[in-house]
Length: 188
Image 1: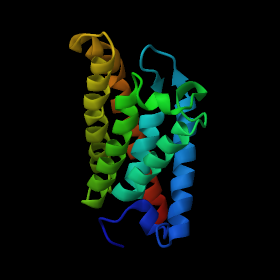
Image 2 (image 1 turned 180 degrees about the vertical axis):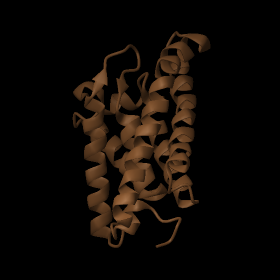
Image 3 (image 1 turned 90 degrees about the vertical axis):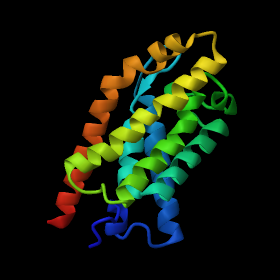
């Protein structure tokens, strides 16, 4: 088994267009469900979306993970209730959380790319592959919030970054543990 392969590739899950489509559909469903587990905060709710995106990136690889998040965003833009709090509609892609929503695509892609480049095994490597893109997500999230609201830059950082830092560490650790355990189960 190639040491830089993704978990879904190792399971034979990326061999056909049909299996890729089913992975994208299933991943977007998981992502939509993870958005419903939220702590309402203003203007950015705390959800399990970044955990789901990390797991998707760690298991799918760059292109398939990014395609999954794009599918999720399209579902939400079409009005399906997949965004936090059961919300849907294209206006969410221009609202205060749009930087995070659109940044999810880059987060998924970067996480998957890091896995494809060899950070796919062992807790430490998987943690780095999940944690670095999760931290980078704060850049478009806070920048967009700053641009579209009356918040100052420090206000946007206080609203969109500081409350989420500890959660980002915990979610990256959980994602790394889940995928490490999955690899160990597969190897057995």
